[in-house]
Amino acid sequence: MAAIEIFTSKKKNIFLLFLTIIFLAIGLFCFLNANGLSKDGKRNIVFIEAIGIIVVVFALTALFFIIKNLLNNQWVLAIDEKALYIRIQKYYLIPWEEIIGFQELEIKGNKSILIQVRNPETLIANEKNFFVKKMMQRSQKMYGAPISITSSTMKISHKELVSLLLESLATYK
Image (tube, rainbow, N blue to C red; front, side, top):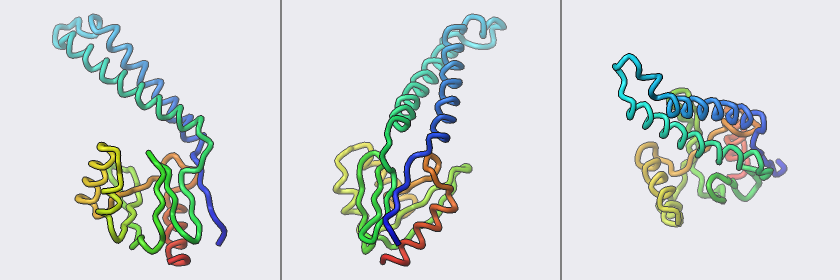
């Protein structure tokens, strides 16, 4: 099996960009028209403005990451005979000998693949970003795997990704 590289899907990211812009517009509308939205007296103006600000901040954050993804022409997942390479927040190299297996997880319709490793504590300890480290610890505690991947923004379906990972694990381990 030759080395495989999987890139982000521009189509999926453009769709997410469109949804985020709509979300941003709704947040701005709520913030700018709080008086009009609370005319019946049942809704608090400050509450509507606060919701609008929260939505705008969330949408702008999402917009930043979506645009960053659109401009990034690098692979997000690579597979070869030595290891599984993941580029999420940072670059992870997980040798096949360290991978125990993969487990599918679905939370509210969002499908992920958990990567079960032999020494998760070492992987977590090597993480320098405090927030990412806490997320990895929480994932390890809740699901038994510190790293998970999703095909939602990749140029591959979830089913194909699971199949590819299982086939690669069987071939290279």
